[in-house]
Image (cartoon, rainbow, N blue to C red):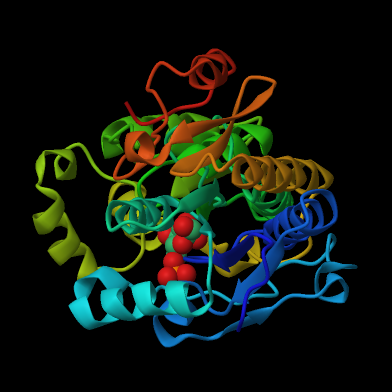
Length: 352
Ligand code: F6P
């Protein structure tokens, strides 16, 4: 590809997909092209495309009519290019071959970390935070979270009616390995009796005490929202390495919890692992707006040559933060979060 005098940027989407990627691609491309007169290379399948040289110039028709679509028109992957020096060299070569002035990396924590490494090896980079987990450091919100929250809340609602009919305990296992934002919000939104998140290690006896009370009249049923990354108080003392090894041989959080409850209460709670439905589908109105704001902010930063930043939202302001300040950090739920305090006052048990 030969470049004219105009600026040219590459855009890639990496890591687990999230609703809002297409609105963000649309916004950065439209602002980049129509407002700032830039050319855009769409890089396929995240960092894999940057390593392998898979990408092509995007034309306005490519990024029109996609605001409502889930997934990502560019594709994504969990490629970890920095594990291999040849791949790193390939990324540098392709950046040069495509004659890029900047590469825009849309993704979660892993992507922002890699974007920062690309910056450290000399490339111009801009990060855009996305993930249903809402755990990217340096931004109040990531797009994808709101859509996933609607899906997960609806699922918890649905579990409520069947739990009530059968007088059962039902468990919704909600995505979020390092941070429990989604389980916390969907749990509160869906009126769960117990919410278990990685940030608050749980004591099974406290959980069981709450469930025993709920199984008495007038209720006789209970709903639990548990995050994928839930830990018991004993497990909280383990190193990450030890826990990872143990987890590799275990069932997922919902099933583990169900077994613990069965041991204490005699009856086995039913488990619904919400899984990838939380990540799929059309982005909510909120996520489309946030993604549009992030995309246009990234285009503005590029036009100014203000590289090495991740766009972010702080309060009502769309702003940016240095990539080096956010890379390799995780935004976990603070244990004194106001939503937790409110939920406790409204009767929810967190197992602590
Ligand atoms: O980061 C988003 C996320 O959906 C997490 O909530 C979940 O733990 C993980 O991705 C699942 O990853 P994969 O797509 O590799 O199965």
